[in-house]
Image (cartoon, rainbow, N blue to C red; front, side, top):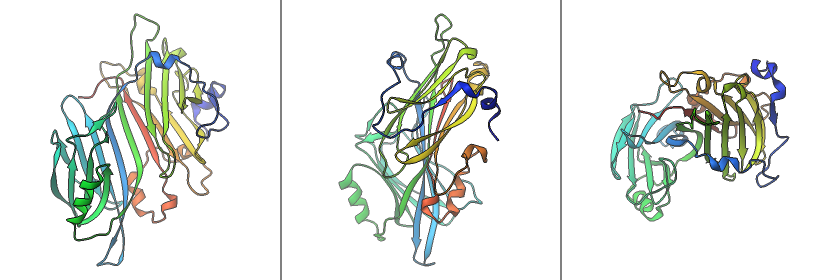
Length: 327
C-alpha cells in the first residue's frame, strides 16, 4: 500500500530513472552554495562484529555502537555493546575531553578494552575525526574494531594482545544528527534546511556527496531536493502535503530506498519542540523486491545479530535534523 501523501499528490514527486556514480549532468545549481549547511553535532556508527570463540568452536555475533558528539556540554565519544537480539545495548562507556587513554569495561560475557589517541586528530565540519587518530576495541582480548590511520600505533597495540586473530567487523548503520535551520521571517527564506554529508553505501563502494535541501517561503510551497554527487535524484514539491514519502535510486549497482518524514520539522512550534526531520537511506539485499518502507519503519538494529549470512545485511544511513541546537 502506498503512502497516503504520495497517493494524494503523486505528481509532485519526481525520482530520477537511475543514478550511477560519476554519470549524468548536475542539476543541483549554484543556489545551494549561498545557504550555509546546518551544523552536524553527533555521529553514531553501529558495527556488526563476527568473532570466533575457541572454547565453543563457533562464531559469535555482537554489535558495537560508537557515537561521536560535539555539543556545548559534551565533546568526545561513547561506546556501547549489544550481544543478542533479546538484550539492550550495555551501559555506555563515555570519553569526554580526554584525548588519549585506555579503559576496560564489562558487558555481560564480554570484557571490552578500548584504546584511543585523538591528540593530533583532524576534524572536518562534524564531531568525527577524519585523520591523525585511532580507536581500537578489544573483546575478550581479540581485536574487534579498528578505526583510524595511525598504523604504527595500532600495530603496537596488536603486539600487546595475546590473541592475534582480528574479528571481522562491518558497518551496518550510520546516524548523523544535525541542528539549526535558516529561519528568518524578514526575508523570503522563512523555512530552509540544508544538510550536507558524505556516505558509502557498501564496503567496496565509492564515497558520495549527499545534499538534502528544503526551501520555501512557508510550509505550503516548501520543496525538497536530494542530490548525490551534485546530481538531483529526488525532487518533492508541495512538501507541506508530501511531508512523508519514499523513493528509490540506483547507486553503485545497488538499489537504495530513501524515506523522509518532515512533519514535525514543518509543523511543530519551535518554542516547544526541536522539530525533527528524518531522512533514511537503506540498501536492498538479495531478492528483496519490496520497498522497505512498506514493512516496519522502525529499523531494529539488534536483529542484525541473528543474521549469520553477511550478504543479507544491508546498510542504513539515517540523517536526523532538528530546528534547535541540542542541549
